[in-house]
Image (tube, rainbow, N blue to C red; front, top):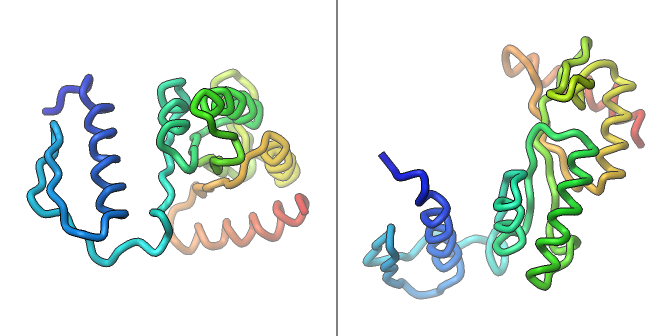
Length: 179
């Protein structure tokens, strides 16, 4: 029931409210366009100072501009190492426009992991972090070369036990080839 054209404005206002709630010591009123709160006072307060990091996801220029303006981290999703490198270049330009450096922002990727048969990417090539352990190890090296700081992996598993087994296998069979 929300007007989609207002989502960014709502996000930006909510961002301001959350940052203020995290950082102001005293109770305050918030009278925004979309949020009106008579008493704002959170407890417990965040341990991180000045506040927990703000991670912004997306790969459009609008999303990268939001990272440059508001973010402490950028998270891409389902991207190849080449795409990560390209998006980091675009992010670096947006950060520079705001007087910031790429080193001011952490970068992460959320990626699915599939064992065995390689999955096809949209461009027809192999989807990263699919296939053999050697292919996955090579992907991790390429992500590191692209400048990626973190990878959030989603294992394609049927249950928790299978997920844990796949994580252990990834650690023993793939990560050992990267170090």
